[in-house]
Amino acid sequence: MAEWKKIEADQFNESPFRMIGKEWMLVTAEKDGKVNAMTASWGGMGVMWGKNVAFVVIRPTRYTKEFIDASETFSLAFLPEKYRKQLSYFGTVSGRDEDKIQKVQFSVSHEGATPYFDEADTVMICKKLYAQKYDPACFIEQGIDEKWYPEKDYHTLYICEIETILKK
Image 1 (cartoon, one colour):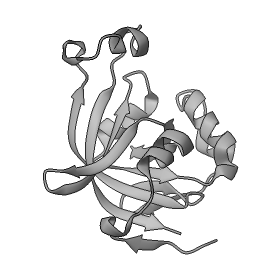
Image 2 (tube, one colour; image 1 turned 45 degrees about the vertical axis):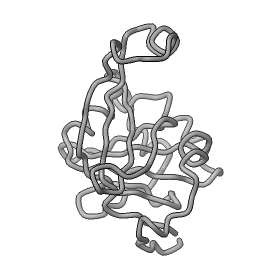
Image 3 (tube, one colour; image 1 turned 180 degrees about the vertical axis):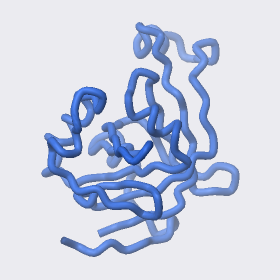
């Protein structure tokens, strides 16, 4: 298996639009010694409060949200296309119902206390800075609430500092 290299954020030249929106990512955290992950295709990267950050949004119904809320850190893992089927599985099956990681036979490693998957080719170790539930009164564009939140299950926005980027 390829070796991991730490890179600086200003050396990261990948498109977040492609990586998040098209290729997807696994958001992974640990709580009480158990690791859980979910697939996400909404989020972004940039600079906030003088820090390199990523942001992700998680619905309250997602089991992984409990893990994110219980942890100071979490990882964003980007996997090669050959793992598309597993990414889809992580996005449709709940960790409440079965051990998804064991089912797909992924290998969990840790950077400090933060879990990630060896199968990834890029991993971001993220420290939570901010969390806020979306407020429907704040939608400016008409139709977003009706289209994306018919069940009123508003995402929580997490802004996190990207502490480490690992690349193979």
